[in-house]
Amino acid sequence: MATASMSRYVRQFLRLAVPGLFLLPFLSGCSLFQVNNSPGVPVVSISAAPATISAGGSSTLTITAEDANQVTITGSDGSKYTL
Image (cartoon, rainbow, N blue to C red; front, side):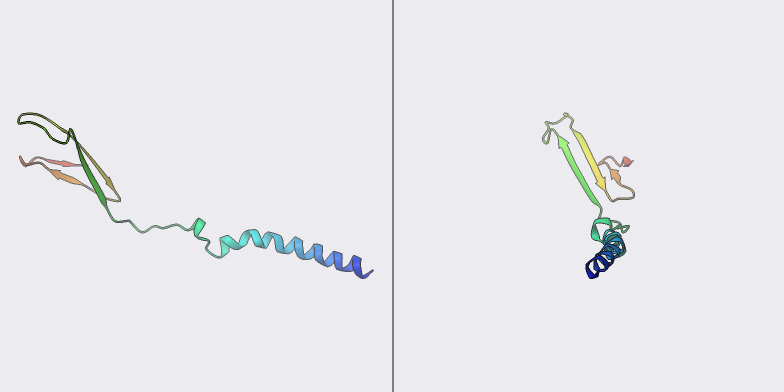
């Protein structure tokens, strides 16, 4: 009888404890599910193709920005482009 009674307690404990183990990461703030709402440091990259040109030639500029609200590019002639 002691074995049957103990077995019942073990089953009851497992029935209650196992779901709690699955909920523990959510309740403890597991970094796997952490949300970061703070903005990162803005990073702007500029590349030219081709990198060098002769007088009168042309080059294509590629500009990328991450974590920036607005990027404005001002040319040597005063023209402005907002991305």
